[in-house]
Image (cartoon, rainbow, N blue to C red; front, side):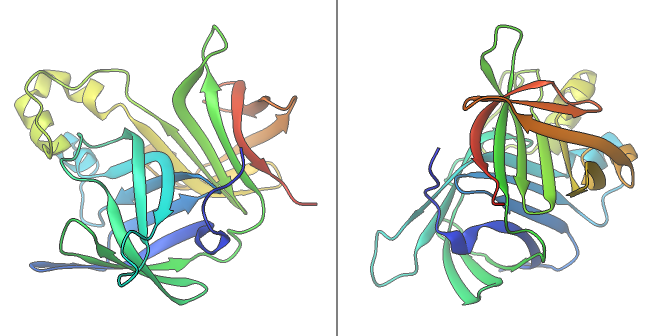
Length: 250
């Protein structure tokens, strides 16, 4: 699939600041990985006690496709993250922001539908190869599970199998749902996202929704076996994947 996102957005971006009318956050660990079309995102609050369901439920993460538009020539262009899968319950408004580059590796985002400002800085080593894969089920059909690569970084996102409980409303938080449905906490929290550096066939996990994975190094190799399919050999990862995007410069 040809990329539709300008190259200036490619790479892995670390959020260094979130500013809202009543909140300032410079400590939450946030990574946004952007390929030519596909994105993955993981956010881990620094003060979340992830030994508890409450702390785990405060994490955020999602994946899907990204679009860049400029509906108003007076305003900066708009980046919209269309979430195919999401750790948190559905939102009532699109995830979209006005984007201004202060340099090639520094990006300022201001909310298109909410009052916030975010500062993003691109990580060194996150440009070059771009890969987006969708896991295949037993029948060979693509699922919502994603594996994304940008430069020397890899992110894996596996959605939960359980449906949202009856009565879940737009903008509910996962923490609120876990408190309302404690008997379903394990199923609601069973959404795996892991991120880390991937070099020489070794994936060193820096952050994950399952904290026990952090700091581990896993063997992980991938091979494109046809125009449409690839295989991945790695602990906890499916073998067969559909190629959504594969850009691997020599």
